[in-house]
Length: 164
Image 1 (tube, helix red, strand yellow):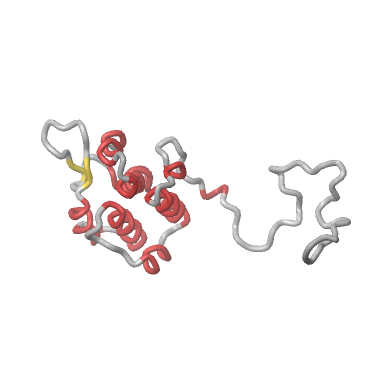
Image 2 (cartoon, rainbow, N blue to C red):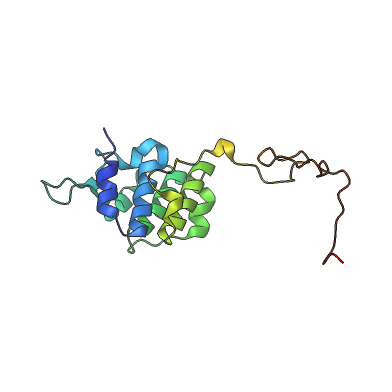
């Protein structure tokens, strides 16, 4: 069981929505949805070196997946085929963090901003995602504090509007 990633990418090349959909299948769950043993991964003709996705067949097979997987695959299918639109208000809310990050990057790719989901871009690591909520009162480690800059919360003046 292998993931024919290069063959799928070559087939989808130059069509941003299809590229995004294929990347979703390749990157999610260790490539489980893009393995060459899946019935929707096909060769366009017997002697072809390319692999393609039969989006209609994948859509027909959705019943065997969990709710989150089904929502995720619905989105991928919708990007790959205009015949299967989705209700994002339903499908996005049921995704775990990892799949949601992939879908957000794929959406940007489908919209013509491919740098977020290029094949060389690593799969988002949700351990590095900052939780939403109150900002930390400590200094941010990515930017060193300047010598003449006050420490967080000490001697900081706030200005409402233009500074005179």
